[in-house]
Amino acid sequence: MKYMINEIEIIINNKVLEDLNKLFEFCQRFETGGILLGKFSRKKKIIEVDEIHEIKATNSSCVTYRRNVDMAQKIIDKRWKETNGLLNYVGEWHTHPKMTALPSQADIFSLIDIISKTETILPGTIMIIVGNNGELTITVGNRETIQSYLFANIK
Image (cartoon, rainbow, N blue to C red; front, side, top):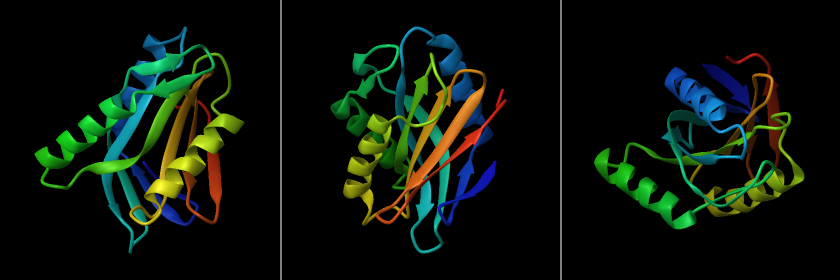
């Protein structure tokens, strides 16, 4: 699937969407999440999401998810090495099992923090949230703006 969000072409592999839905269905009590890996071109303003990786939380509830930073970095390093630098970190994903897929204030603050660390590398940073009622939000941010698009009935 292709989307134009925040002047960046976002391409999401269909398997990524399938995997997100499976993980959402499996984890209905607590939020879960992880990292998005893919390819990007800063010059062409394209990000392609090819893989998701679930990262066990250091803190999780029905409305909170904090991923293990060290575990995430190990996966990023491993996949980068295995693909000779083709796949790299492009963003985050998590679930909202008890509410809409819209980003919370905490989600936006988290994205702003991540953007400050990735802005010189990525054309934008992606956050995908899977919520109840088959909703999915794709949020793309850079130093200037953050834009979110809510999609319904993604199943």
